[in-house]
Image (cartoon, rainbow, N blue to C red; front, side, top):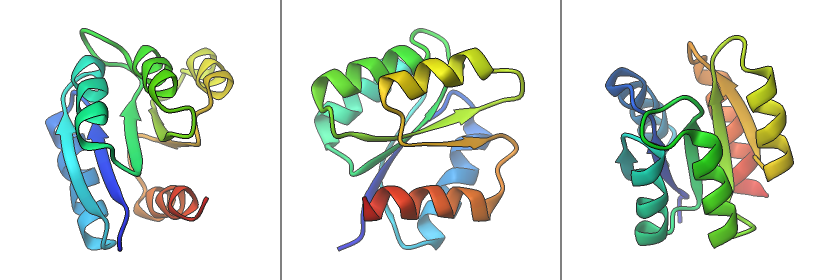
Length: 121
């Protein structure tokens, strides 16, 4: 059975790119959320195997969403999506237990490696 992936990003373009990569790789898209608050709600509802989580989003950022998801499930596998110049946020995400990091603009190979690592661990 293929792993399910929840995509959390406020950018419609980023969600579409990630969805295409996830679909082509044979993973199941569990859902798409447009901010951290919705992402946490979808995580609880759909119980995906993997979450891709943008750091910078309105309403609730990816760091707070990661914190809440890890509270819900300490073993949650969350791949954080970073933009340039977010080193402090990345360090905070590491402390909270982020499984992987990928950066924008997306490189398909990097996304696939992160998904594979999470699916196998």
